[in-house]
Amino acid sequence: MKTPYFIIDADLIEANLKVLRGVIDRTGCKILLAQKCFSCYGLYPLISQYLHGMTASGLYEARLCHEEMPKGEIHIFSPAFHEDEIDEIFKICDHIVFNSPRQLALYGQRAKDAGLQVGLRINPECSTQEGHAIYDPCAPGSRLGTTLLQFESQIADNLSLLDGLHFHTLCEQNSDDLETTLDAVIEKFGKYLPHMKWINFGGGHHITREDYDIPRLECCIRRMQTEYGLEVYLEPGEAVALNAGELHCCVMEVQPTGTDGIQNVIVDTSAACHMPDVIEMPYTPPILFPPIGDSKSGSYRLGGPTCLSGDIIGTYQFAQELHEGDEIVFGDMAIYSMVKTNTFNGMPLPNIYIRRGENLTLWKQFCYDDFKSRI
Ligand SMILES: *Cc1c(COP(=O)(O)O)cnc(C)c1O
Image (cartoon, rainbow, N blue to C red; front, side, top):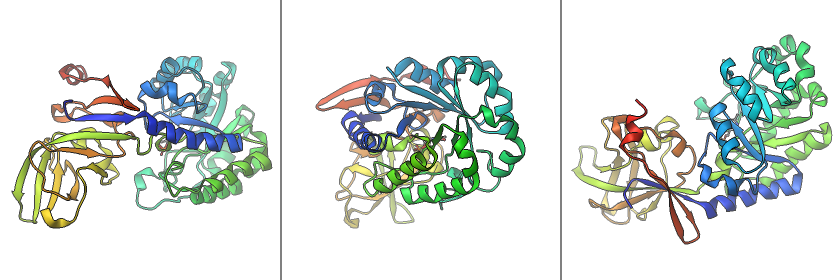
């Protein structure tokens, strides 16, 4: 198998889906996959056995689930919709969530006439995360979501158009932060909730992480169901595919120890091209193989073969020395990876395999034309 390549483990995805299904079965909420995190549609038939559907960030993602998902609801949210896409969106989506009073005024009535449920994304102005400011839609000056001030001054006329409210404020967070957010939503928008049929809690719920407090999540869901009679939607991305993917690469060169005491290692995968979140977020991806160890064999800084100085995946210590030709396997590579790859520097795209039990199937093979056709 030619490196670099991704392996998606369908069994591990299914294990995540079973956890999510437990929440559905115990509470009666509805859970959708946020495709922007994971859109490998080879897994859509499996996913649709457990979840209620999918959510899309725009027409292309909506089309993808329309074409590839055997059954289920299609929801769509975008900060702004294009007039030349809106009719096709109306044809294939069941729910549409607008970001602003202006977008609701522009398209809300047409969406209703086309038979869609209409929602508005609200901004409860309640930041619960530290560290990742670019993932905080509640940060001051955010363009995402309608604040209470905007809502009260501009929505009153269009309130009858709304079937539901949507908020998305979390990123890789636990249910205590959801609880805090929900308090803010109720404090600010509570008086409008009795007019609604549903509320969508957005994504960022790390439900399938080991330390996630599921009973507390279920309390949040039941609170909205019983106090306001609302249907509750969740639309996680990461929780569906968490820890269910690998990225395999190969060591191309091990350089001598540098002035900072670390050996640079060139691998045939790239942070910038194949796992851009490593740089954008930033984070250091876990390594599944070779075994991580103490510092006996020194520290290795793994970097890609691109011209970008900052194309650094991370610095690691292994149980044994690294050598040219060694394979390295990064973990948790199903989320926000394949959907973000690019061919900067003419880097080849990693092929994608799907593992199911003992079987490994080549799902997608990329070549030079994938680079050329985009330019
Ligand atoms: C990104 C996003 C999600 C999914 O978030 P995860 O962190 O992957 O769970 C859901 N809804 C909206 C509106 C989003 O922008």
